[in-house]
Image 1 (cartoon, rainbow, N blue to C red):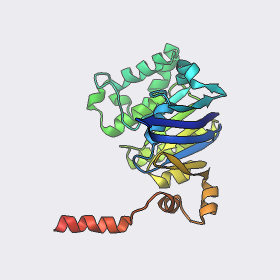
Image 2: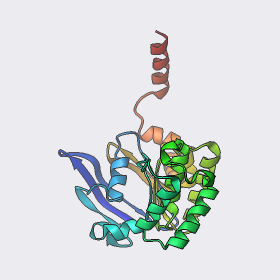
Image 3: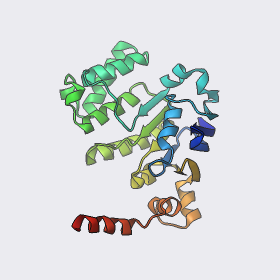
Image 4: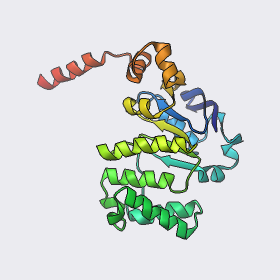
Length: 254
């Protein structure tokens, strides 16, 4: 179980994330939503240990992750929004590096890597440098690295970036299958239709603060709206998006 308690991050006294609390249990997928600048990336950076919170605690299985960051990261699988990978390594070498950093036995690690590369259609390109991979191929490598060591907690930050339609559908089913295996999953995305289909719970941020937190069904019932997109628009969007779009066309044609 991942428990986030009163998480706050300030920069020069200004809160990027302000008093955020939530719990994700095994078998649950929390959709973490919000417009650009709402604090999603800052939250993920704190959860993954990249930055320290100003206030609050992050507990995994009841233990403060700050007390054993290395042990925590061994149980974490993470797909970042921006794919920081080593371009001079091949796809195979990158996954081997990830597996060795996790302390995986060599023989078992290589078996799993080859199986993942085969499943994602990358086995034929396994010796090619990552610098020659397309964005979608790099994303498949990142997803493979995240699940390679069978982690208990998974954090997916815009995981569909660059994936084609078939691969995106495979990933949607993968998230559901992982949750059915008892994994604890945080899913950050702007693709509300997918969040609605794969997540059990949803949290919506605005300017670093929580404006909604419930099950998907609970939010629909509470807001009396048919879709997550409608709920998001009501809680977060303050602009007339259709009017803005027509304004952009007018500027283009001027």
